[in-house]
Length: 237
Image (cartoon, rainbow, N blue to C red; front, side, top):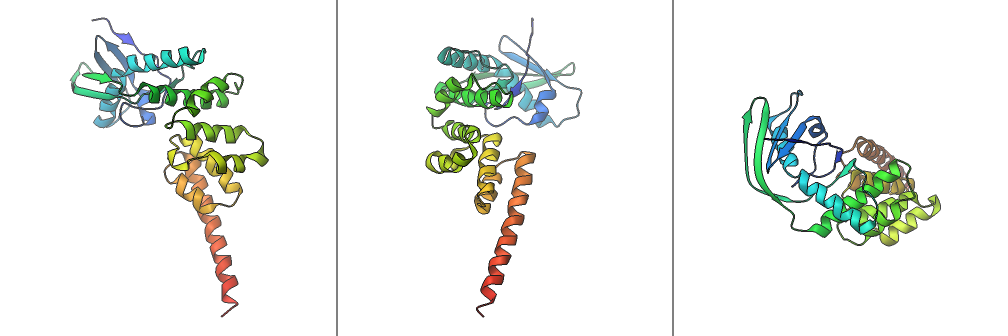
């Protein structure tokens, strides 16, 4: 059997849930609907299973990338990947140091996948300082409810400082944010405006180091502010 060795970038989404960073440690190969993975790192069996599921979806990830590229007329950065799909009839077994697996992967909503990849491509381009190509990706992301909030967050991040807050207030559905980077960007803008509770609430659903630190800072600021209010009220009694 001839195996295809996958070239992996930043995998942003598993078939069902977000991929943890340790999955990038796996070597992944796929051939004729069968995938296999291995790693020298000591990781739990659950991580091996997730890695094999991810390998099974590599052809679908490539198709999402191709469809987005056709829509925007640009190449999608190879470092970015996204997929929301289902895997049925999953089966796995160990052989010669590899975890092998089979399953039937299918996408039920192509528009969601295209939009999800598009907004991640836009964020990646901004992080790389390549701003000239982001407009088509942002336009695509803004057109879908799944990705529009993350796109709004990126636009606010790029806007002049004095316009950011008003833009978010007018356009953001904070509950629809999905990306850690987007949640951190929005929380940072709210932090600058002293919206401590809003920052705490949003960063509670963000698992990045930056979000956790910002949450701690907001909690400290809120505690200080609450204490000052309590001192002010005490003068009336």
